[in-house]
Length: 393
Image (cartoon, rainbow, N blue to C red):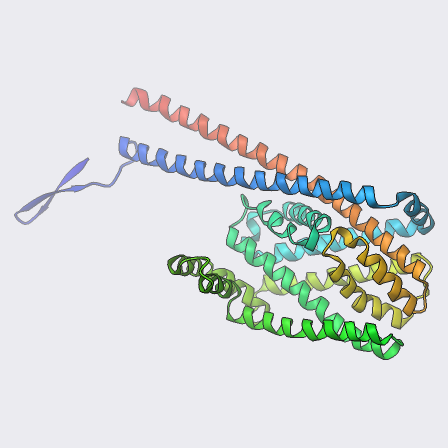
């Protein structure tokens, strides 16, 4: 469709803008709608497949955990703890809610695109996968894919990195304060002192390096490394850096120029950690261990280091048991009490994991149901447009 354009003596044909109701406008709108629907459908399908794979992996990990845990020994321990078990579980769920609130706050201003309930479900799902798989890393992409159809991927990535780095900073700060105090208050064997000293000597430079990388741009540094090792081409590296520039800017807010959402997220991280520490102290008291300042400081510092080392296997099977046995024996309690604490910690993790897997099933089912409704509405709208277009034609 063309219009005649007069300019002095010159007359030329030029395309006229599409008008509502014309065949061109209708076809173009229909094509764009088809492309968007196809892209959204493809993204949803891949997310669903990934989440189903993660659910199967988590289910296998849960089965392995239930088979290898001596529930006949754990049941009397839980019964002996009594009402404290409910208090501990309530505190753990509260900390989980604070974690999700921090993630939701870090998403601002895009946080308005997704409800807190969905963020909580995605966080619980990822937490379950982290608990039930080695190294505790597969849950992070799971959290992101659970919300891909709700918020921009770049914002989801930057906010989850902000949250994890903020938690890491908080935990390492407590460790770097608590470990020297523990070594001063407790007569620790020389071998353990050497091990802890090596751990701190490795951890401190890594944290400094992490801070430098974040300041320079975490994503751009990673992409640059991939290019230098010839994993990706120069053109692709430049494209990725440009597209992920906002991600680096958002992550950098942890150090300076914090927005209201970032400040609020940091507050929720601190609240979550304090509630988690309270839950751990209540658990120690529930098994009959006499609480002393040295024991509390050691558990929240050296104990955290043991948990990190033991995360290389699901739920720290074996590693956490031996580490806590030795730690509690050094702190004036008995090694058996350390084993009880480890078993109860494992029971806490299993309970949270079961809830998380349940949330994963519900959220995935609801997302698929919603996608099918959207596709049905699109088909109905196309049918109506076709019906109206026939008489006009």
